[in-house]
Amino acid sequence: MVGKNCFAIASDRRLGVQLQTVATDFQRVFKIHDKLYIGLSGLATDVQTLYQRLVFRHKLYQLREERDMKPQTFASLVSALLYEKRFGPYFCQPVIAGLGEDNEPFICTMDCIGAKELAKDFVVSGTASESLYGACESMYKPNMEPEELFETVSQALQASVDRDCLSGWGGYVLVVTPTEIQERVIKGRMD
Amino acid sequence: MSRRGDWVYENNGGTCVAIAGADYCVVAADTRLSVGYNILTRDHSKICELADKCVLASSGFQGDIKALHKNLAARELLYQHQHNKRMSCPAMAQLLSNTLYYKRFFPYYAFNVLGGLDSEGKGCVFTYDAVGSYERTGYSTQGTGSSLIMPVLDNQLKSPSPLLLPAKDAVTPLSESEAVDLVKDVFASATERDIYTGDKLEIVVINKAGMKREYIDLRKD
Image 1: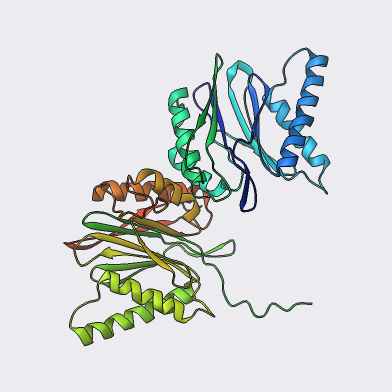
Image 2: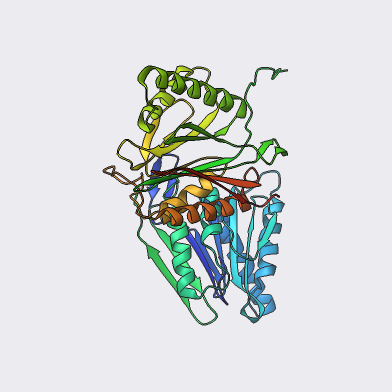
């Protein structure tokens, strides 16, 4: 979700196989560089493989260009990587958030074969995506300060995952401004 | 080759919401009727007044919904003649459940929310699945926009959520106008993201003074 010169990216922490919960501390939001994060929902093995491939590509980019990738460029990279597997896809929906030129927040999401969807307000993905759409649409206001943005994202996440049996077991929220990064783990319904 | 000449249902879309308060009940539904990606009309009511303190909102297949409402209205009239009084909301709730289960093996494709005042004058909301399983709650939503609206009601209604255990008697402490404002907000949000919800919002408020009806415009796209 976008705020005033900042963004927040959040996920739940459950890893499950249908009804069985396998882990309650699964990491879905990954750092690419200080001002660029990617969240991946879907099949856990694809989440981890895709993250490893993206970090690899970004490190190569850093070596060649001697600078960090812009969020827009990174989004195009993810899109291309996913479309390479058009007829045998990665079962993941990424959510990308970063601060671009002049610390302008950038967010986008994609389907599992790389169709990019830019947004100015918020993007969602995962099993609770419909609930998240409703909650975010109701709770979002433009130009929120970081503290208010954190509250809004946490409330929207908690309310939505509480209505989804496959999501939950706490939340992980990261708020990034040009000067600092705040990460917090939220305790919610552990079921 | 499989001939699909046997699929007898269709989903006409739409969303219904009901919220129970200490001495009022708000029942609301949008007025769009759709088939597939087309809109058949922007002005179709999904709400049926069954008794003076009892209102039913249903979304799903409108053919079955019309039949269900007709059935229940007829049974209510019979009750009136036999008992010399109108049916109370909890009684209608049980009747609706039994009517739905009667067609357990060829169900009414109707997702219902019943709202009204109970015999003590407190707000009550009953929520159903398609075959009659029901529960009295403090608030509920059914229909295509329900998964978008439900988390917001959980968060905003400051009343014990049906997800808490042990089950608590759950009417919201909000006032009538606050509840109506909340309903307008959630429908505005659902209209943005759900293609089957929109056009107009019909809100019925039941309190001891009677029933009031209000229409609000929603996005038509």
